Image (cartoon, rainbow, N blue to C red; front, side, top):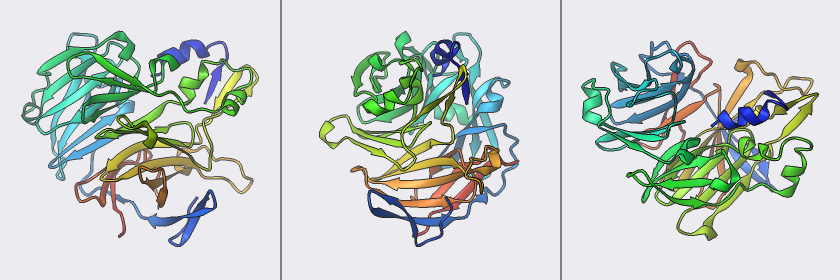
Length: 357
């Protein structure tokens, strides 16, 4: 990605290898086991999606967000039965009205409700799950939040409320915690960059750091995990015990930027696309570009590759599942092995695979 040096300040303000089993990636002198996994089309998928950006399966329901068509559709989130994929409801109306929004930061599916956090004019839309199944698309409640929450990323539930990642300004904290009533209740930690990470920016604006370190987010209990979208850094935080915080810098290194004339080139060749916490494990979907024989990255979409990395909460990289499709999002079913995912390069984008024992 290139961004003109003059235009960067405005832009930033608006932005919210194949190895078979037995091979491995070296990490600090330790071999990380790698297992090849074949990804299959999801049976029955005939949905015509533009660019799937999120998928969530809860019992007999499947939720998804289609980024490419969100700007054209009347609603931002789609709900289907699972596994039949029968359309049930399209909700979160797109627009500028009282029950509408132009973008969302994420959503949380609870036992009886779905909570959606909006961008720009930050609000929490609360929908009754039974209402959505019946096709009712209006929120039961709309809760406003302070404007400072307008650039939230990765809205998630914890055991004491909700959190999201912040990338608008270093002063807002790396993680922002909110309650269900419209208030910010805590800000935690800062971007874990090193002096050399700043030095490599050269003449780039210093406030480029929050943009470069924007991340995908997952949470469970008091644990919050962030994975940089433009680099190979996984951050593991415990909101009740900071001594258990860990930062894992992978082999591809932190987010970086290069100068090309009057433009800056961001490292979109690598980064975390989605995260899930299952029990005591972190499943992190990492995407990178296959290298050509000359050593140059091939930028075509079909040359992008995905690896599902597995970590524990001490930051130990336990295993990598090397996938044969360039996935952009995923969810883990209740059995802890079956994965439903999205491949934005495919004609029919929903797919599935099972993790080997």
